[in-house]
Image (cartoon, rainbow, N blue to C red; front, side, top):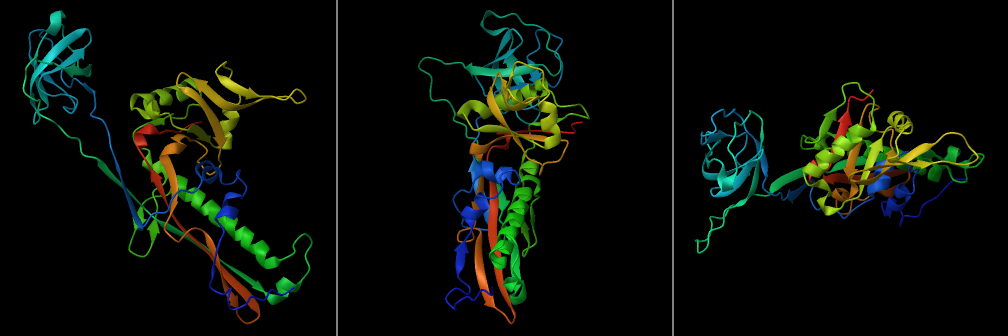
Amino acid sequence: MTTIFSNDLVGKKESVVDEILLLNPYQTPMINLLGFSNPVTSTTHTWYEDEMFATKSKVSAAVADKTSTAIKVAETEPFRDGSIVQVGEEHLLVTTIDEASKTLTVVRGYGGTTAAPIVKDAEIEFLFVRGEEGADARNSRYKARTKVQNMTQIFDDSVRVTDTAGAIAQYGIQNEYDYEKSKKQLELALQLEKALISGLHFDDGNHRQMRGIRNFIQTNVLDAQGASVHYDMINGISQKIYNTGGFSGGGHYALIVPSKQKVVMSSFNSVNVRIVQSETKRGHVVDHIVNDFGTFPIIMNDNLRSDELLFIDANRAFIRPLTGREFHHKHLGIKGDKTEGILVGEYTLEFRQEKAHARIKGLA
């Protein structure tokens, strides 16, 4: 049957966002997990992230002399004049900081502790400042917020159905145009799903690509070097997230894994996994991991590489459309002996505090 559109429908936007969300979640699990968030107002989306001052560093040169008062460190950010720091069992009082040479001048064996030799790469931790009754106000310090950006990316496709194709009766298909439109929606959703995971920042003025999750995660990346995924490996990346403060705000964490790694995880022989099992069927499936840091669902997603997994906080990841550019369909009308339409959406990924997420790569 030929579909005829009135002039009022030609060029009018018809939202298909709800239809996109109702697509098969097994094909677009990341979209299903994150959903769509509030719109952005620029093709370059900018947000600012706050971060506490670091509290730990490393000693960059060994100190064999227990009386030496010069301690070289990898980073001076955690320390300030008048702070008490700890190396092993020894407390030290920081009196001055040389930023250029990254050297702390200290009083050894502070507070009755015993001075001891300090090895290279020993952890040195800021504990607290030494308070003094009646002292003047301490010099304040400020850590600037970090600016983070991502680009919006356009996803589009066309629907074109000849009047002949629309008129031919096909089993199970009432309207050929609507059928083709729904297929294109799934294809665009898959493109968005892959961009969210694998996208790389690109902008030449006319073409823009968003930065994806894999590229955002830079801090907590574990290279398995061909080893198989195992429970202790996941516990290890959980601890990395914990050490950077990722779990401090609660979060909604999930392990995103390809089917190859899901099969391996389902064979975990540990009391720290949650098993889904049917009395009438053989085998079992692991659907949650339980460790010292929480209980985390496992979501299978074959849009990942087969040798990786992602551990992300869905509360810190947002799929955001450009204002007025949510996925929509426009009828272009009847052109000759065919009917045409276009599907378009423009989206970006806002991925906050990349240190609160993790990735394992190079798995067997």
